[in-house]
Length: 399
Image (cartoon, rainbow, N blue to C red; front, side, top):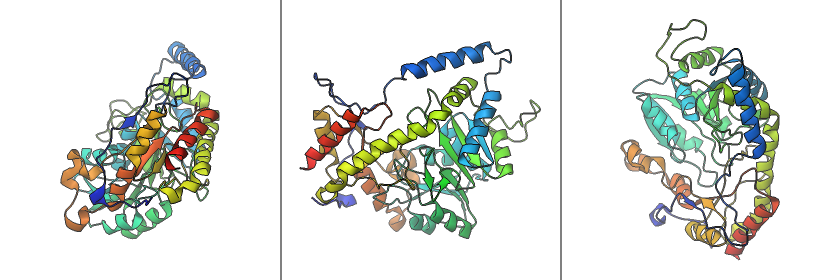
């Protein structure tokens, strides 16, 4: 079975997810993330009571948020971390901080989440879609550099699924052209490349705490990371309507309401000591899958790369030209799966006007990634037996 596919033969996009009916024997392995564990529900209640009864009565941007920022900056090895209301908000703040203004161009991946392009448009700038490597599914540095013009202000390499973008190459070409690097590490907290933490390679970076992320929480939230004191200070003002946090109602620039919640800050602080274990559990599941699927490459299954360097553990996505058949096979055996981005961003109606023309509209890597990827269950509360069963069912499909 070949693993090659042309864009002309790509199948229609399937449904976003395939969740099977639960088998009567209790062997179902749902894809979707399950409810908050009992211990974390109790922790959330405790933190809510603590914040609610605190004499300070400060519910946003209080001392817990400040402590979380300090500790996250220390863990990542950067000068500053600025907590804000969401990953999308963090990307908007980061783009504003590096000077993106209406009419600028910002290079983003053609394969990925909608906010990559929507935040650029929200600032009045123009998203320029770079192709991705069809196997790693992250931005191709050579293609990205080929799209630089005199209007280019920034490039946004985004780590995707289990792969970090090639940050050394991204930083090198960005410096060559004098453009900013906004590292979208929303899915990559805890990952490293060459011993350097994800989120710390660019002029600014970001992590997301959306519930399904590696250090997700029961609500929205994110942090912007930077070693540049001026950029970090600007992000702090922008998140709070342009105020500096010292004098209220004095607005140094037009900003946003993107402030962090004290209850969620307390919750994240109380479990921060578990962050490495949470990432390690996801990594162990991914490595089990990798070991089981190594022999299937010659039969038509492409599994993510192995090892620690440059690996993140948000979504475990395999690739095959039989993607839809594999999803149906898994569902028939009680195992859920998901297709995250069934259509490349420049082919979505909202972004079609920015797809380009002629050769610049060709992005074969993104087309292949959209047509072939299928995510398997990867969540903290998967049991070893569920992981093994998932691997067994996938392997049986290719026998």
